Image 1: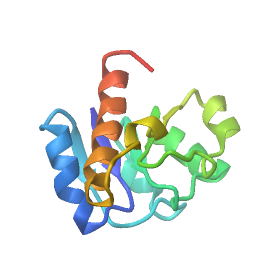
Image 2: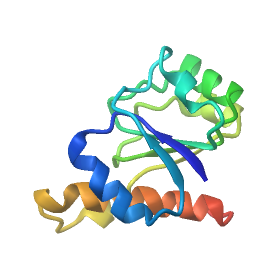
Image 3: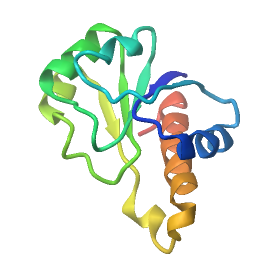
Image 4: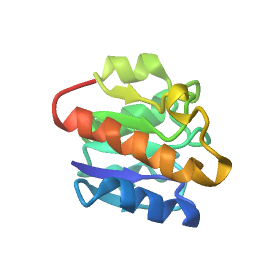
Amino acid sequence: MRVVAYSIKSFEKEPLAIANHKKHDITLISNSLSPKTASYAEGKEAVIVFNEDELSEDVINRLAELGVKYIATRSTSVIHIDHDAAEKHNIKIANVSANSLMGVAEIGLPLALAKETILNLDKWQKGGI
């Protein structure tokens, strides 16, 4: 799956690469998702975001125009995503399960978040979620 990951911090790059195992073609960018940066999703099937990224109706409309079908957030929260706009465009949303982070030490959090995010991409690619 072709993916762009927004708001990537330097400490997240290695865990995402490890979790991905070269299964998905992921472009990592440090810019947050906004109306100005949505164009980076051109030609991508999915975007990976964080809870600080803007996923307003305008941004989701733009992502839909660019062909994005999936939004995976590297957080347990999805309140930053306009669900009505995503549903209107049949864009699927997945977040990290809070249960998957139970008992994870802070040092292991980036890898745990990355693994769950990649797992969501894997499920979409196989037709799940």
